Length: 428
Image (cartoon, rainbow, N blue to C red; front, side):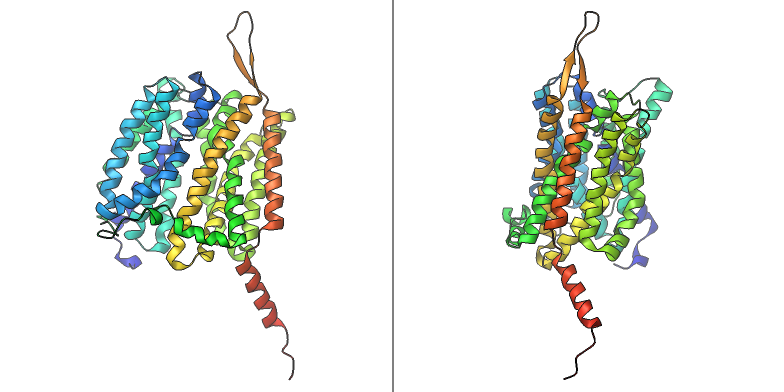
């Protein structure tokens, strides 16, 4: 499709689709851990609930396979958003850990496939090179989700972080996203009439790439990186609330705000430094993030470092994870590129995040004590300095392992060829 053939109205509707689709998630997810802390749940219950997204990621390829063969994508998106709205409302009304988990797990099984559906709809109705300009509105929607906290505080004089109100806001935003889904161009099922294959849907054919030790190491290291990454993704709201932050969602959204700009640097870094060094920068900055959390708590008057840790989120996500997607695109043959991208999504935001939620929940619980007094109820006291020390060390180890053990063979071959071409030819 040529760029000139895209009507402005279609571009606007696709951008609006991205905006609401990501806002409906961002408005409640960053503050979820803080809310769960108010329900007096066990660490296991909280970890399971925070793992609902990861489990939803693991199931989404199968759901998308069924949808792609029988229904138009925009209709599937509409139905999934309506169901998600109802389940988020149901979760907001629950106080029991088990029922909250069941409701949010069902919601994530419906919601997570929409990340793939919205991308498919956008790329089916616009040139591939223009997709980032449409996808960036998802990040803008994430940033704008923080407005709910300000509106509630200024207009209603109430604090919504740590309450069930963000879940209700998510339900309302999901209804808006469902309405917008009905306005996007018709996108027929691309694989209609083809036999459904569980092997294809789960990306199992892409597992053949694991025969390459470099690719196998990349998958393993990417999965392990999600463990320290997840403590920020899922539990930072607990830390910020403990430190007395009033606008948790809005504060964390500064990371997504800077992501809009750092994303523009990723192509430049890839062309100048290559995949390995681009991803190394992402890992290095993640180490700096947790060192900033640590030093901000250890050194008096240095709590401004907390904001540094939040603002660098875009570098971590863009340079490491997007850089990894570029590496996969290079390694996989054309017929396996889609499955390979699904494979890394399954291992990182699926398996890796699931392990990270459980491991980090246990870590935080281990270094948390209950302080009681004769006049006050029990209060949780967190040993954040120890928690951030352990997390920083893990990041440093992963950084060193990636530096010494990962090799981008294609980059090495290109460099060797360039050096060979630069050498003067020997006379016969």
